[in-house]
Length: 328
Image 1 (cartoon, rainbow, N blue to C red):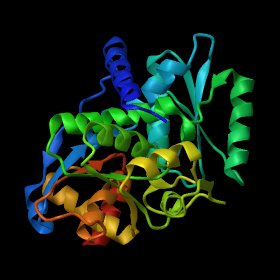
Image 2 (image 1 turned 45 degrees about the vertical axis):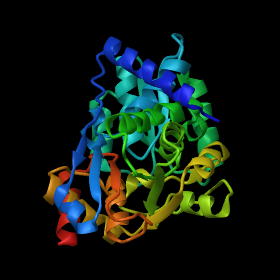
Image 3 (image 1 turned 180 degrees about the vertical axis):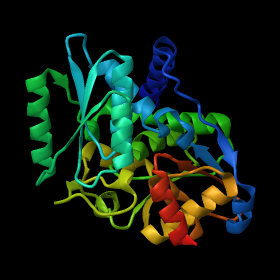
């Protein structure tokens, strides 16, 4: 299990390499949303990871992982991602002087694929019949190319890197009562909840997934790790994880207070409200947090200080306009 000490070490690693590599990683702001607060009778604050370099929360976790695990003899990095994770791997690999190859599932966002290429990454679409097949195929390909392939679904350095976001939140807002985060594979939940509960045991941590991508929701309810037979279909492409590993589930069961889900329609309405009230463009995967609050999915007392993570902003303008028009 990852500890607060591991997370503090990760934070030092990220801060040190951020300066050395001039990576541009930001301590993203907490942004109050006063009008939305009045709508839900709670003090709502957004952690704006949509403003992070590469447009998502993934960077500290990727940097901490690659810094601790990639050696000088490795020719490049291989990643499996529907978008944001691949973006970060391509970006950090480039700063480290490494090549990158990102395997994306069928139907992955064209905009995110183009962004991966803009960071120097090579993109290949691969269709797998199972998670185990994907793992074996990518492991073999990495060995053939002398690339490093991190299995980020069960990696303690990756978890610890994500935990740095929890430490930031409670450093900036010590009186936070509730933190609401998106959940796909559960890695963010594992790291952030570990940090927050270790620093402030009384804080509540809730995870929100997409209703059509229920791998984490089912794993939490059944208390059993597992994998789906196919990639789920949802506009929340960053939450389409087909697997929750035992390492992740152990952390989630120990530290998270509940896991809930929202529909795509509810997410589109939340995106519209985030944009119209804060001028922040959240991708669907980030807007699930507000969607849960708007639809009374969480048992949060009125007047509570609630921090919602907007985990990414990498939505193509055409898709964003389509979602916003649908919600109107």
